[in-house]
Length: 184
Image (cartoon, rainbow, N blue to C red; front, side, top):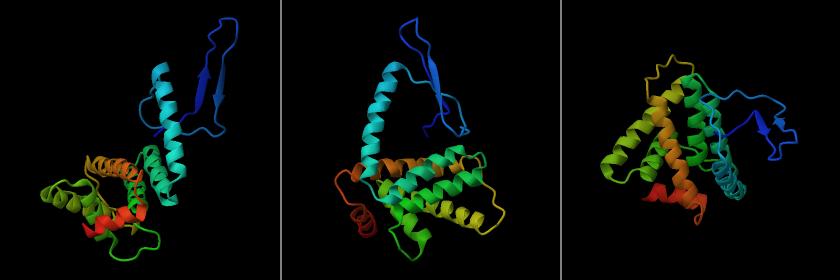
């Protein structure tokens, strides 16, 4: 996630004063602070221009997936993180208005996107099925225990899915990509 509460600007000329720019609403960020050096700041600015341009040409649900992926980093409670991540999965892998067995569709599509071999796809499908089962339990008010590392695995698969889909969306239509996952 990328965010800021304040940007400090220091002038190169010693006779001028620096200034701070802050957002109107201060957001809480979880995790260590990271400061960009001059080279990193330039590289990040270039990346952000490309990313913003890419996002403006994508379906709305892709932007929803990215936003929910980022918002999970603001969560402290693992169940809340899981729900944000699962909303992102649903936005990424379900076509608008789609109906049917969501758990099965999600586990199949994620496994086909990420798995290079049949054995790996079986493992990913089983794990994704469990992700969705826990999500459903939370949503329906059940008491859920989330083991250590569980949300990290959900995040890892989601991050990999976003990267692959972003790459494929450079030259393929979103609906075509999802249809291929169903037919392969």
